[in-house]
Image (tube, rainbow over all chains, first blue to last red; front, top):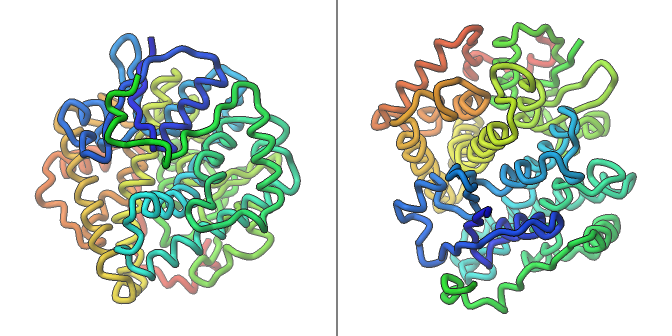
Length: 213
Length: 213
């Protein structure tokens, strides 16, 4: 059975949980206490050289890291990833957008907010991240004005990935009120079969996740 | 014929030039003067919602952006990208690593150095980027200690992508001297058929690139 190395406060971990729920695919979870530094233990660095979650282990022992790469692997051959080279690459374009313009802006801001590190960050850096996040939301809003999902008519892992941090922009201090097309798209994502909401971080005691089932 | 939207100082543009050279595939270039803000013109935003280079346009008018997505598309079906789902995903893992840990650290530092913006950046931010870049180089060095290329015996677009900014770490103030496995790998990349070096930015007048052939 597939093993998912996960950490409940991680939205990158949520991406994989959400896809596996859409697919109805069983898996076992192994929790890595990132906040306690367990990602940097040698045994886990052998799974993922960066020490980050999520990662997966297949039955034959092969491992794969980076949430967007795992999404591409698990969605291969399913309705959540186009089968042709151009469609797959268009999904990869949006996964790059997610990493560089969504996760790197509102993902960082949200993480620093939730962990209390925000006041220690240089104000100029926070402003760069906020400006970048707002530009990303504006680009998404423009794109989603003309079609229901990022690739067109069908929900794919491109939407799933951008949704993970995107729908929580408010946690990063970037209210979504002005982005009507993004808000409507969020509701379309929530209506997908097998959708599960993320675990709200305030409901998690990070120190206990290593023992969670 | 394939159109490449490019800008010569861009190492992300170089990635595509290098792959097309490996493939011996003809293309025409259209230059977008990023430093002069031409990426934000509406005509180009229709090609790439973020306004960044590179992007490509196919004969049928379809466009694709984000360097790592373009690499995956152009390498599909060639020796530079495995044909199986796991191999493709493993390449995607390293492309995510490139974006998050190489480009986001030494790529930013190099860009600020070359454009003279470094002194305007908060020192704490520069330190975060330098620390992150050194961690990325250490992870690469560990990985490349056991195999010639990131995926194993064969050079793929994973190597090509990491090479683009990675081999210029010195421009970002991160000398490669201590990373022997990375240095040996750089020479193996340079020995690949069809390899072309990047254009050194000091040899470019950015204001003239719009007129280059």
